[in-house]
Length: 123
Image (cartoon, rainbow, N blue to C red; front, top):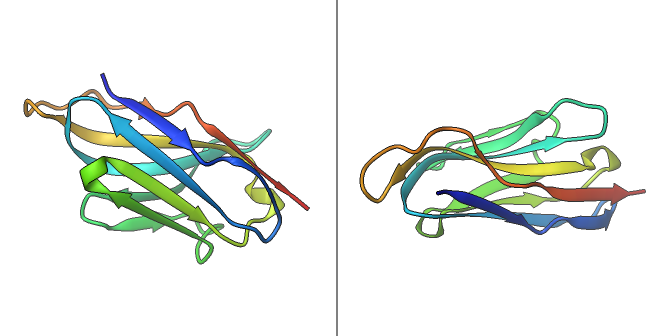
């Protein structure tokens, strides 16, 4: 059905930048909300940022001013621009989508996730 594929993870030094991408594919008409979550070793998965189809955004306090989420509705793709990276940003980053309408006008079940991409910030 719907697949989410992340890209852009890797190793970067503290203070550097990285941009993550997540493309949704399938029979999709629209996606209400796309989001980035992350899970660091020994910690719970947390919301990093999300964005609605209208462009409203929410950020975790820990990334405000450093990260920017954006999306291209025509491509069903969400991005996460990460600047001024810190070692504590090291985590597996996951893409999430909810409120997905098919081209036939029906709603997909909730709970679509990407496989995750590793971001490692060294000091």
